[in-house]
Image (cartoon, rainbow, N blue to C red):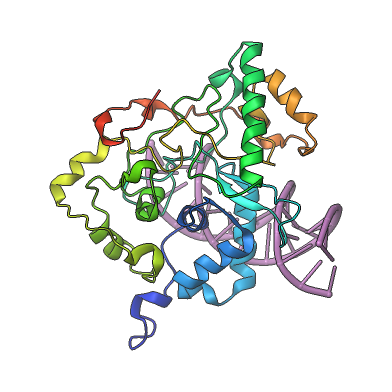
Length: 297
DNA sequence: CCGTGTTTATTACGGC
DNA sequence: GCCGTAATAAACACGG
């Protein structure tokens, strides 16, 4: 409306938060992690609004990356060119967004507290560390497989109950192992174009798979499409986040990690103090498990 | 130096 | 009105 003859919606400010936008960007790439500059690029490519005042919104975006627990920082491989780290989504942030709206998250994502996932067995800690070592290798080595989950006791960190969740929206790009499209009849296609008028249909959106869905498909709301952020598979792939996420780890594990050469930064005060919201009442994996054909354990 | 990352503060808005 | 979330501004540190 600002400029009738031109791009109509396109140069309006998209109704999505920076968190949403960032999540989109991250989810849009196969590796599920992007350097800051690529996140910028993604947003600018798709949302013309953000081609201006870059200083302002990029500052805000960086603020969000650092401030929100839902983003984790992944170190760059030494031999990889470029500045800064990669950014990824925390595996447990799948249901961050309100159903049907990206304007607001349902709740600020916080890392889980130790009470919620403490393995409590030392062997678990060892196992965890082993996995982390592998993870780091795989991530820093070649490319990440698709998704990941820390899998440290947080068996079901969250469920994908929202067809409009950011991950689901972008998810059409995903190649789920075994070729299983996770789309599963969600109202993706139409909704995308209507719900995201601000977005340019570039690679992410226009490769629309032949998903025919009707409004009746909304009944799928309760279906846990857990394949994006959590990898569906039990396969963990995300490397050790730089971000401390101290509360997320059992103490003995955390102690371990502190010794890691990665030299985690000191715990962030705000994270340590509040241990609110299990964020898992949605734990109720209701839908037909047949949908994802992936182990949900 | 500039891009990146962290942190604090302020303001606005919506929900309860 | 309070509280939580988000947007914005700004200061600062760090590293290539």
